[in-house]
Length: 230
Image (cartoon, rainbow, N blue to C red; front, side):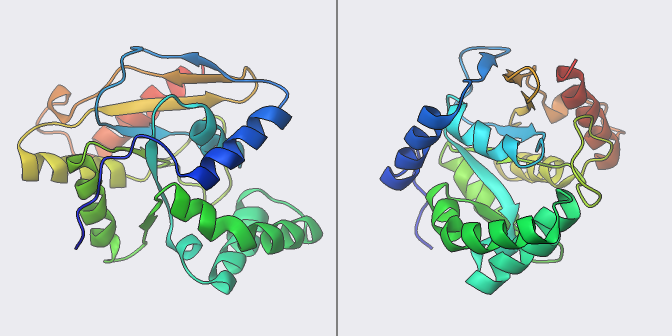
């Protein structure tokens, strides 16, 4: 497998899209960083904020972040359309059928190019998750930071997140197991109403009691992310 390179900026297509977004967007989110000097590499865990979070963070966060995303969005057109229409727009965003059909049809055309451009790492709901972990570790080894949205969004997206999936904590555990050092886990919150992008204090697995389970650590980090919204 070809070694993953350190990435410092998006490709020309993504930069072009970002310029367009910045020109047509009415307001520019303000940054409120816990430490202006961002670490060389980290795992950022963020809120999705409906459809706005991933796009806003990709455009305005002052560091290249490689995102995790649903694996159907990296496959053929019908796979992407089906996921967009049934899961993302209808189930999670609660859009009506016409709006969901129109957006899924149009965005499905360019989505793979966009996701390839940001180097999206596909996530899986089964044993194939090991592929996600392996690719993520390779990115971290190459000093690329990751962006993960751990919210359980099966019932839609909430400003105050009620439940987290623990895959990002498992990744941090695997990172320590392989490299014998802890990777920072940084809460990253996009406050849509206030147009703020906020980072919290970095967390390390070594900060937690050894007896805590992965579920306990995940829950503690969920609370820390929610606290940024206040």
